[in-house]
Length: 273
Image 1: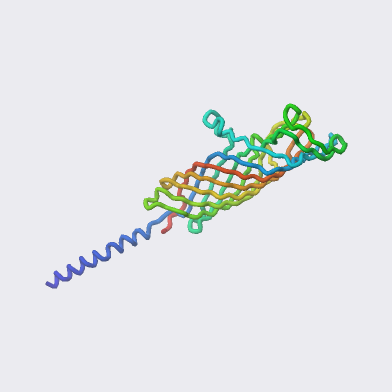
Image 2 (image 1 turned 90 degrees about the vertical axis):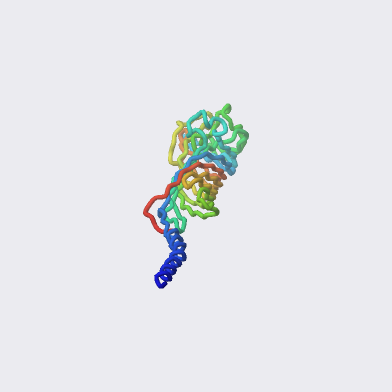
């Protein structure tokens, strides 16, 4: 009888303790401490009005095109699947979450944006050929004028990233996050232009700096694949842009929308969740 009671107590103890043991095992589930991700996608943008200032001392020119407008050249709406991936306005992100508890990370953020001086009437003011000028000209190729950052206005940013979890399904196959990003870096424009029929030699150069902030909504599927939609504000200052026998400078703000497809991988040592 005593053995029977002892057996009953052991069975009861096992029944009660097993769920607690299982729960404890789940609580001890470990994950990687860090996370690496990469994404690629395409963008469109809108620019603030700006001034383009031209200095050509040898020609006696020091003038500014005032309050000009510019537009982008998407490319992906024309020949996304019939040309190289880097022809349209593309972008990439390479990031590393170095603190998953606080959800902090670092990101290399590059946008191949395009700025084109819009054709039409342009107000020019300053000195032209050593004489004062304050008039309007027709800015178009037929009249000897064009100004392209069309192989890229090219924003490169080094961003600090903060991530907030918004939703995760029970099976962890869908996760939705919001990411805030802010950074600073150089601009690497491709400069191609003609003023009064005098063309430059098209080239890439380090041409100034930019700062930017963005908010991104990211949906991650099956833990490793994500789609990220971003709204971004950027301010860029270009200087020392090489033109025919001189330089140009310009500054403008940009509102940009980006859609990226990416992969994310847990990395680093494991730790208990």
